[in-house]
Length: 111
Image (tube, rainbow, N blue to C red):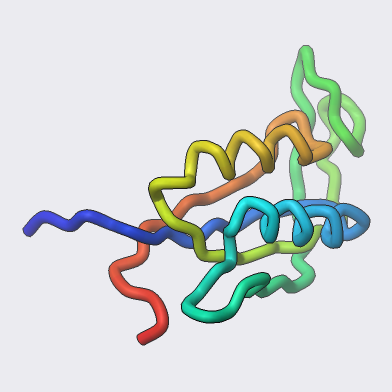
């Protein structure tokens, strides 16, 4: 069975203080546009952990120590045809050296 996906869902993990700016950026990029609505974004608080290794410049945390911080997990739908542009813009905006952004293909939206 073969599928071509028109839409995907992005999961973006970001510090809480960057949420409003990310929402504005996603709207500018037309991510979160579903039918006759735009700015369709869901988010919730999560706890993230990481350990910076050699040659890193972490936003927060110390070399070789496990860090634990409050983060916001943002979920938004976008067109696959715009995915590369959206990912570039998010990475440029994001404060993390290695941002966590998952792109998950969607079979259908707005069921």
